[in-house]
Amino acid sequence: MSAPAVWWPRASARLERATGYPGWSMVGVVGGLVVMGVAMVGLYWDVAWHVDFGRDTEAFTMPHLLVVVGQLALVGVAIVTVLCATADAAPVRLRLWGLRIPWSAVLLVAFRLGGSVAFALDDLWHRSYGLDVTLWSPPHLMLLAGGALSSVAIWLMLVEAGPVARPTALGRAIHVVACASILVGVSTAQGEFDFGVPLARVLVLPVLVMASAGFVLVLSRLALGPGGALKVVATFVVLRVAVALVVGAGLDHSVPHFALYLAPALAVELVAARLGTSRRLRFATGAGLAVATVGLAGEWAWAATANGHHLAVAAWPLVLTLAVTGGVAGSILGAGLARVVPGGTTIGRTAMIGAALALAVALAVPLPRQVGDVEAVLRLEAVGEQRALMVELSPPEAAEGADIFDVLSVHGGARVVTELEADGPGRYLSAAGVPVSGSWKTVVRLYRGDEVMAVPVHLPADPSIGAPEVPAVPERRVAFVDVNDLLLREVHDGPAAVAWVVFAGLALVLGVWLVLLHRVTRALQVQPVRETSTF
Image (cartoon, rainbow, N blue to C red):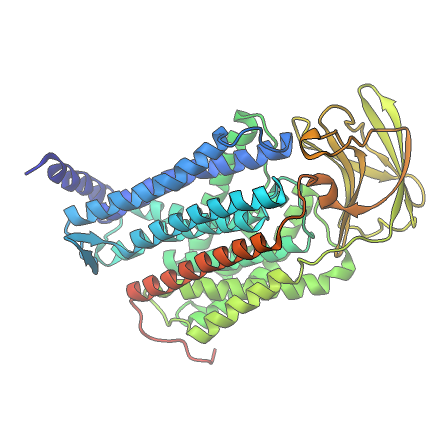
């Protein structure tokens, strides 16, 4: 027998004894989680670098390298998983050319190959429309989606091995970490809010958080049993704190904050205790409602404390409507994915499609934005190397009830947010001096409802894109403009055909991903009973 043929069974046997799961699945899960962790550090390092310093000066930075290595290494993990499953004679259904191929490994390769397509489209996007430093460009969002779906594929490796598994304490702990990695993955879309530099309406944040909470925590409660949602949230917090420490303390960049998900997890557990989980449509609906009400209250208190995010009182009817829609839709989708977990009725196709469409609407409603008719007089007074700022608004009530009204300074080596304190009708003073020299971009932000705007205090010259300096002068009267015009000056118009190509390519990749995910979960489904329309 050759050396590899001896090595694979021995490695798998050791892993199986330690975890109670078949060794081939543990090779994939543990390897995948480690690689995902490396890529996650690379992602948040990259975002922090852009916040602190602006555009990259070279293509292959260390953060980019970690992300790309993670992309390629996950394909390697899938290949090794197939080799281990073959060596172990794993009872998987897909067999080709003598190989035993877990469905979850197929998914992982598909998600990573799709991510490679998104990388290529991202390069095309930047060449056509500028080197925008935002997480929310279409190719970037597809890359984030690929990462989140890869964590789902890793979790499905555990599910696929589950029928013959006898999990030990270590095996159960790894299952919790796998579920927590899904929560980490779906939360990456909140990255700009985490760093305090959102370019979208604040209304987007509660929809994202409630949808993420409903999807992952309902799935976790069904997969892990009582206490599962709380265990996943506790693990998520540990993972995100670790990333924050690496990026902040270790690499000396801006520290990302993050949603805690504690209140939504408690809400899911309480609904599960009250309604049970066997009738999954009823459980998911109840959990989604609880997540988007009780959970939202707790989560928004944290968001206001940690990042200073606020929403005007008049906006809350729409906030609750969209949060409930997102929370319930996410919960139904999470329960639908849990059809691979035994122990209850499954959710029908109609409910799943309806939930997906409802979630899309809830996310689309907050996207349109505009600029209000507001002007500001900015006055600067020297305070050491910085400047004290006075802002006088016209009309004077323009900032009353604003979601965000402050001074943001970025790209000077850090991120600084300075509060503006009222000093009379329509007049505000900065709580501290603001940086207005060198590479600092300093703007006054005013976000209110669907208006997302700012005025410049200081913008450095950027010869590479032909952008002139906006100097810090003692006094300036200026009208508010779209915040993107100031913080994304690199963006420019380009050929419309490129946008069509990019969107068509991304839609094709996403469609293939979803079809594969549906077929794989159907292949792994162990519970044939469908949920009825009654609760």
